[in-house]
Structures are given as C-alpha cells and as structure tokens.
Length: 541
Image (cartoon, rainbow, N blue to C red; front, side):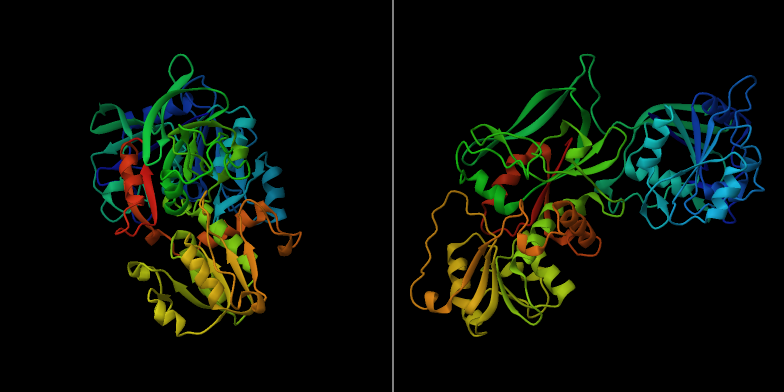
C-alpha cells in the first residue's frame, strides 16, 4: 500500500494558529494540488481533531472524479452527527476506526444508522489507535493508496513509525508564531538521530514552495527481485568480517533500524569459546545455522517492515532479512528503538528471577554487574524491594547502581555475612565459588552465566555437603515448571515489554559504532579497562 503524508504549513512550521484555525494557510494553487492528490489516492485519512476543528468534507472536487474513501481515526467516537462527514456518509464511503473499549454502544448505533462503517482496532498508547493495524484493515478492503492530511498528532505518528512512502509539504509565505506545530515528538533526542528523508522534488507554486520527499530507509529491490545486504560474519577466533550478499525475495522484507552486541555472550563467540559445529538454538534464533566458520551471529535486532512497522528479532547482525512477521515481536509505540535493544536481556532477567524464586526479606547476593546482572538487580530492587548486594570486581560499574547496593572489594563483601540466595551472572568461576561459599545452609544458587566450552573448577569440599545447597541452572529458552502452567513464553515476553515501560535501561547502552566499524566494536569487548554495556551497531553507516 502506498501512503502519502501531506500538509500545508507556514514558513515557521505551523499548520494552525494557536486557536486551531488552519483554513487560510494554503493558497489557490496548493489547494488545487491537494484536490489532485485526493483524486490519485483511494482513501484520505484524518484524525478526529481535524474533523472537530475544521468540519471538512474530504471529497474530490475535480469534475467527474470519484471521491476517495474517507477515513477518520476516532478512538472514542467523538465525531458529531452534525458534521458534514456524517451527514454525507450515505453518499461518500466513510470508515471510522475506533477502540471498542472506549466507545459507547449508543454512539456506534447512531453512526451506523447514518451509513458510517465502523472498524474496531487496538491502541498502542493512551487513546492512540494502532496505525499499522489501520493500514492492514484498509488493505483488506481493497484500498491500495492513502493520503494522510492530518492533524499534527496523526502526521507525527506516521512519521515517527516510518509508515509512509511519500511526504508532500507545502510551505506558504506566512508566519504564524505561537501556533500548532506540524510535527511533534518523533523520538529525536539529539542531532545524531535527526530525521533525514530523501528529497525527490522542489516546486514553486506562486508564493508557495512544495517539497516532495520519499521514504528511503531501506535499499530498494533491483529489477531481479533481489537486494544487496551486509552481514557480520565470525571468520576465526578474534576475527569478524563484513560480507555483502544478495537477498532473494522469499517472504517479507525487513530492514534493520538498530542492532546491538551483547558483551557477555558475544565476547565468548568472538574469542572462539563455543562448541565448534554445534547448531543454533531454534528457541532463540530466528535464523538457523551451525557454528562452523564462517558464520553469522547476534540476537539483538530492531527491524521494520516495508511499511515502517517496528519489530524485535532474535536475528544476527545483518541489515536486511526476508522473514515472516510471526517470527518477530511487535514493539509497542511507547518503547523506542534503543530501549527495545534490551528486550532479550530483560526477558532473561525475568527468567532468572523466576528460577531463583526469592522470598520477601531474603538477603540476595548477585555476582556480575553486566547488562543481564544489572537489569536483574534493578527489577529485584525496584519492583520487589529485595535486600540485594551486587558484587563485581570492576569498581567503575558502581555508577549503574544506587547507594550501598554495589561492592567491588571482597573483604567488604565477606564482612556482610551469609546470604539466603545467590545469583551468578559473571561468567567467572571465582564468582561461582564465592556464591557457594557465601550461602547459608540450604541456600539456593542460580547459575545464569553461559561459560561456552570452558571447563569450570569449583571446590565442593569443606562445608558444601553439610550446607545442603541447591544449585540451579537458568536458561531463558525454556520455562521452568516451577513457575506454573499459567506462564508461557508469550506471557513472559509480554511481561518483559511491560517492565521496559518503566525500567531505566538506556544508561546501559554505552557505545555506538557504525555497521562498517563492527570489527572495532568487537575489539572493544575484550579490552578489560573499558566498561561496556550494550554496544549499538547503526545500519547503513
């Protein structure tokens, strides 16, 4: 489906005055252009704010041309019966998308009797209908092109989510000042993330300037139905290379928006500490391969489809994929790309907590202040208020924790006495031994680290047998029966997404590299004097 976003603004970027009035921004020539665009699209879409403010008709006034389907986004069905759109719904096809949970039955009945077609869809934020679902529903009805005319909130949603193909902006030679901005928050925090659409054309219409842009975030397919993509390959211990290859169309095209290296697991792979020739885990990896050089790896990739819908994939470090949506996790609108990079670690932290089964008032020792360890500690502290001590030999990681929560001095830790439960997330056999030695009799140790192909030695002599300790391995790809039959992987993932709505995580994204500099990013993983959380790779650079 082709989506065109179009609006008229003053030269200072306002689409309406402070009182909401916008009718006189455009001049005669650009109004004619607007009618031509309505003629050339199957549907025209606006939000309920535009209907309430302007009472538009949204028809095509070019002689002998069919009117586009009128589409209104109105989550709680505020559209009045007296507006021109409802009055003419029997003559011009009109669809109103709404949230069934927010609308009253009487409102639905009064609109349907006027000939309005009502379609219920989910929301992806407070009062915000899911734009991706709206487009899917329109596509099912045979609509192949949509002209989005506003208002500002609707324009912002389409731009923020990348759900557009063409952007047409008319700039009138007028200054409004303190009015309604054309575009709101699209998630740009600094100039390094600035939104740069591809300019297609500039045209002067009288005193107005018309800019036309295209959405060129992903490379276009060539005439053979294939595209060029780049993938990071592990080629030998301590070596990675970037390989270009052609992807043939076999499924849906997804393009990476942002990806990340996980410092714990990927350090082991970079150093060659993994079972050679073993198969990838189908429960974790969307792409199947075996670990025989050269091979791709990675499991943190935020991608978008050709309409800009955002998803998380347990996918290797590559810029483009041919997949089905069922393999991916939709990302809620309120979770931005950088936060979404932490989805797998948050799910792992939740799994570790479920396996540990802490009791209220337990004294818990957590060793290893990496990304997973830090997230586990923050969830335990912020959601459960646990009596928690985090130990890591690198004192620089203290900045990730609150006061009296972090220790790097072994003598200080030992002065605290014994712990009821311990969680080992460091990948260190010394930390594993420390956990064993620090537990009270009948204490519980959850081992969450992945040690690769290394042989680990611990001392199980002395008081180990008398203490009757429980050692549990924790693995995120499977659910423990102890959590109960009500927990499924889908439910755990939903809970991980809920946690990311309130948990502080972005300070753990410590480095950013262009995709072309992936080798430098991996080199950083083995530098012991660096504190690294997640390392982002920026596709296309």
